[in-house]
Length: 238
Image (cartoon, rainbow, N blue to C red):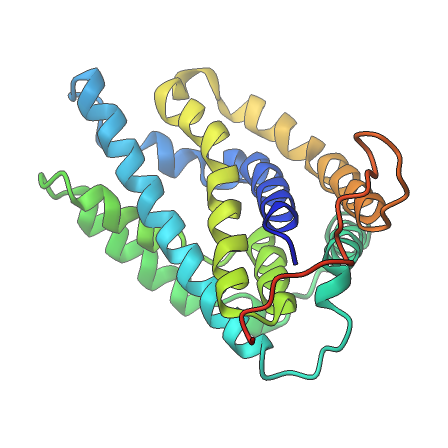
């Protein structure tokens, strides 16, 4: 699979994931103890936080890519864009249309969530600047539906390097919106975050359709150009 395809899929999912993060993780980002810091220190702390989060995503991507390499998922990697677009559409239908009242316990990770939040609370009290990196690492491990979708793409690459890269680009895609929240959090009150959350299924559905079209290589400029997705691929097995 081309690096361009990996970047495109990972970054698009991250960009959409950041919309979800504004509603779910926005309060956490706004709570980062940077109020008394200089502008330079604030940027350093925020970038350390995102570096930690991306580190977690990358490690998870490597592990899922390794696991996927052991599975007989023939033809999935070559059509990853179409597969991920389809999964995103199913995610919208299941979560936002079906609105299930019962969520399987293995998808809730309540004990993990409680443990991570407790550890993050302890780190918030530290005066050490490096603590922002570890806060980011823990934040990247919090259970989240959009992360599950992204990790599915890492699994489908069936490749350690590609799995890690796609999650790295996913993390980079989440940065712009969350940096805006961290710097200008006062402009993202609860009402605005609720409105953004209401628009989330539309964004996910749109990106899902776009990924499917781009994976089909229809030759449509900007929408479905001939990018080589599903035709040429880089393999680390050779």
